[in-house]
Length: 437
Image 1 (tube, rainbow, N blue to C red):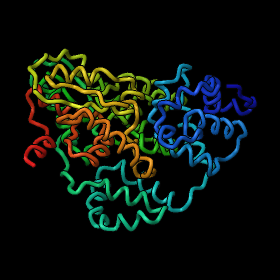
Image 2 (image 1 turned 180 degrees about the vertical axis):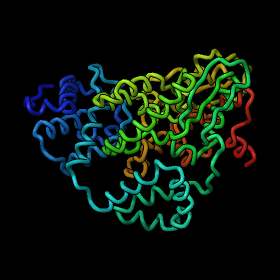
Image 3 (image 1 turned 90 degrees about the vertical axis):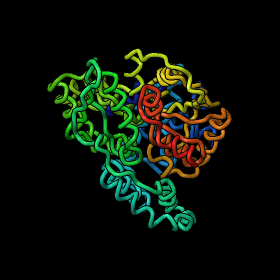
Image 4 (image 1 turned 30 degrees about the horizontal axis):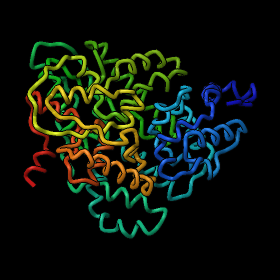
């Protein structure tokens, strides 16, 4: 793609990066076939190619974002299916990240939209606040139907419907600690506690720590670690995201200095994609660039790390698992085979649902901010998963698990929960509840 940026514009390293990304696009349109919003809406401006044109026009002309640009950029799920499909290697992820930062700086959103986004940024990254908000949601749930009738309040209705009816108490495994290996030591890792996941499903990290320690891996939950910054990063609130990144880089660097780390384990793939990008996010920070790159190189999805441990093959379970490959794992991190191979080795029959490349519609806060499009993608995803007639659905991202679980009676569990069960841990609670029910 031909560009016409001025030398003055290109002096800004962020604009220079955007320009180099734009130049790689050859207008081929391959991305449209795998873009969930284009497949759903059929609007060229809701395809990666269309959004690239909008971003180019906005940045080249050095103008503030307008309503049209914001509408179509907001509809992007950042699922990154386009980057998997693109034959030219267009780095759409960093281009749309830059566009969102530009929008945040130059566009004044409608009042209710601003308030909703502010509330999400002030609540979701903080487990204590999030837990309280979920408990209060029970009071507002009867009004969800009323909120649905008022356009600007639809995100509130979506939030209320997504909130679980019960909230688990804080897990001991989320507290700072060092969990000693229960077998001959074969490694030392830190594990991301996260923000939303330990509130929505504390059993995921419990299963990961239980499995890793039984396999001889020491697991550190460091003091001071917090939200990875993904939520605000995708809102265009870059300074807030970088603040989160710097805090975690400091915490994990200290853990490295205290005893070394073989990996930083992430059990929420949406967080993993962001942490693996810390090196890029902080590349211009002379104090943090090198440290951040080191942290990114150590970040591993839990299935990536487990696949290096040569787990034994165990007898068949007689259970069919539909494996939902979260977009952030398959497109963002290019981790596709390890989860399925681990599940097969653990005795499960693994099925790939049709259209596995398409997003389920969760995408962080997308199912809150874009509830209509999200609902259509969720229905499509659940139909495809149910076609495989599984006993259980496995996924590696809490957002996907919540989204899919809200539309099916089939139990949805994290991949590591099934692996923990297969190698001596307890049966996942959601499977137990389903069998009792």
